[in-house]
Length: 394
Image (cartoon, rainbow, N blue to C red; front, side, top):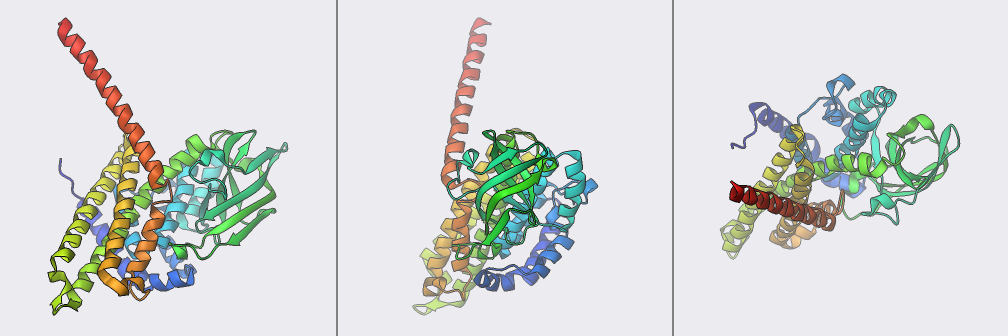
């Protein structure tokens, strides 16, 4: 099996890389310090079709294959993890609606989301609920023609500027999803600051106080919220994050190659020291491995393979842990300079650590992957046992 990008994918990669180098990379540090994403940049991203990358063309999207979408996330993530986070949450909302929304919801919302006329945000996490997402404490009560939502959501990426939120709440004890507009009465949006990483992603806390949501804004059915809608959206989110982690790691490698080629210690360039070469070697190997895992997950998504979900978890697990290790080594290589905001590696380390937490923490991925391994083992053992019995009978 030959693993190679198509000419079109290579061309797209070069195009996105040039855009990132020109429009994003030079300003990412400043955005991080200001904890802010310029509206004009979001407009440019929307005009390039990035916010509708994977939506079908019938809704104004690009209809992009998943490997190309992975390339987009890697390259944007190489420049700025916060901007890549916008792609993640916006497309999570779009994909959830594309798969589970009603016809009227799709016809109304998807063209606007595809063109970036509105920004979508994913509102699942709460102050007391993270990994155990099916146990959300936000409630929804049906009144006959509307739902009344009460509760709090926290760590909502781009919640400060989002126009619509995909909010998860329990209705009659069943996890359920709703579309909530930013100007809904009863919705209070509180900006969050001082976050460890992805500081430009404009996080917010949402407070829902008797927030009335029209019945037509129910997404899917009662009880579909976690097992179907959130799960499918988070799968796309994990893939985006995994590819973004490859971008962080690649940025670290490039920064280290430049730094060790320019700086001398003990009268020789850092790149001549064997321990530096060892770290660079480990970076290269882990980046290539993480990238191939992401390509594999993307390919399986394109062909609707049943293993795509677990392969995405594996890619996210490996890429996020590798990015943190690589970023940590990058800071170490830079020494005291690595602890200064004058060099980007300290931001890469902070961003990489966040990647190990969002869209399913490292520990949750370990549980999921291990369970899959045991299931595969027992299924394989049963199959082998039956094959042996059949051979003996023949």
